Image (cartoon, rainbow, N blue to C red; front, side, top):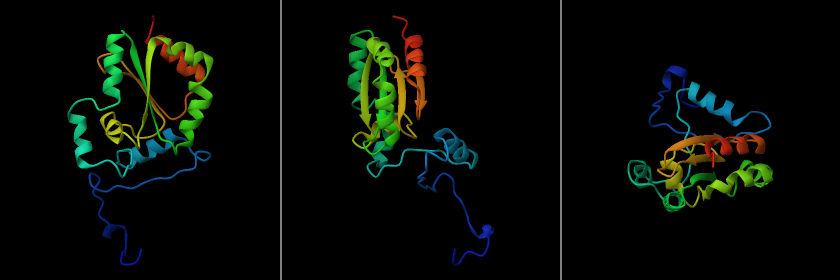
Length: 170
């Protein structure tokens, strides 16, 4: 870079500096990418122009919508909650819908669940609140809102249905 003589001339401030990564899913996995980011000393976070300082403070407050309404419904029906964090532009999210969530095994396992899809572009405060760092992210929450399971990236229908059945013995 012009004006930089050596690596010693570059100061990194990890709690301030941010960068965006675009990657080719055919060359690396999401898990490998996250590991590399963590190894560098950074914390992966969801990037969104719609997330403001007020949104980041949500994590210290009440559960944001639409998850708050789903939790109320889960409590009323004595069910647990599966939250699918996605974005319209996310190809991995579309694949999860088509290959995993629509499978008969998963649909059968979801009978004891309240299922809510959360578009992170429409509800960025929900993604911040639940520390969603990549999509798709699936969360299983008990009726009190405690996280029982998290999956980031792809998951097979067999693995997801097995997990859903083990978390909900009804």
